Image (cartoon, rainbow, N blue to C red):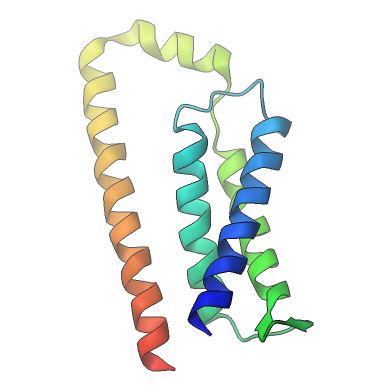
Length: 127
């Protein structure tokens, strides 16, 4: 079951990332398409594994749980995207504040990535 679930999570994350990148084109995609996709992929995969499977089964994978987790997380991430006008005001406040904020966000990102990989590994180990 590892490979079909991986493929479903990849496809769902890619399609949702593509849709949301086109839909929210006017907003600040500071993290970029790849990082949005990476976070969405890992969360979709982990959520699809850990949530009780429901919905139709295709290739042995209950794909509806993967889609709903991916859609929920993509919506949450899209609401957190900054407006371009707001980012101009933040840049004017000072360089030191921006550096500290960037370091904190980078640290949070890597802690999140490692945590999601651990959640996926534990999900398969528990099965």
